[in-house]
Image 1 (cartoon, rainbow, N blue to C red):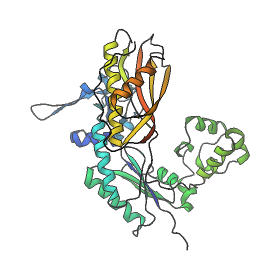
Image 2: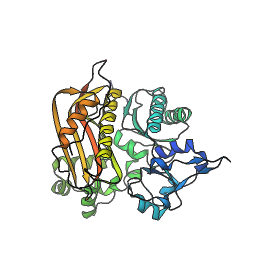
Image 3: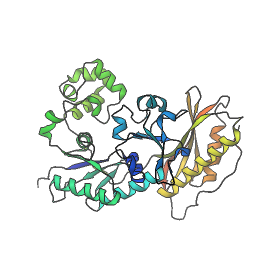
Image 4: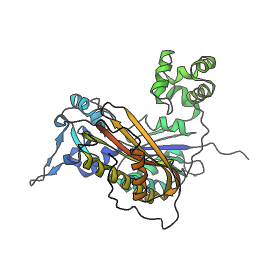
Length: 383
């Protein structure tokens, strides 16, 4: 029996964090808006009903852009850009703080809505999923419209969808007609639609690989598809060179995995100002404990426990260190995570200011029903 050709969709929410904020502040639609401000920069509704907002030009301190609206992107402001640089490009952009609780809420809503139309879903993060449409009777365009409408009805938000025979091409396609777009592609369309694109459009070609390809005068996906295998093998090795050629030619056999186990759970925070382990001991202690409790709460919510507890510190000179401790048995409660993280902290130098602190837990296993809830802990930092 001949199997039907695969139809894989990649659904990507449009400027997700920013779009959620615009539901809350609809008068900001059409304006350049940047997400990434401090919690004390929440807009205020005045007595006359108008909205008092913070502008990017008034931001002082470190920090990076979490995301931005398409209007801000048109001015050159993108995620991971430093706030002060963004302020030079778009000084009048509205600045909003992040609200991850709201984003997680809308993430659950849109994924549940998609499942009512096409249940075979691979969760790839807070704002994107893969969907296997192969066995559904409707044509691809009809399914794409139904999926977009289901998301819109459930959240009020728009998304962009790419549909192709595999995950690699669908992810590229979902970005071609943003926002609120639909792109449907067959393998015979790869030379006309995909090959003119830059090589970095392929998910899996990062900055370093992109630079190496550029040094070989390979800038587009089409040039990569036609490159000599021996040349790629010389610079990237046999395995990665083979993957590069297959990806550029549109080949990808990965299945849509409807269940993926997380490898670790982590929380971290970058401080508004550098904190000294001794002068700011109390503040750091509170932050450290809060991170441990949040990791414990994440574990319980997702139904896991873990054996390997780790910490991450970034000093004021941007040097980063990590330490891990593997426990005799998996844990889920906040007190146990805090104790293990404290042991890790004793193994790092604490002689200069810190700009970032993080806690993670790995070696995860499913937790039994009724595991202990995260506990409140009050312990001294080993400083």
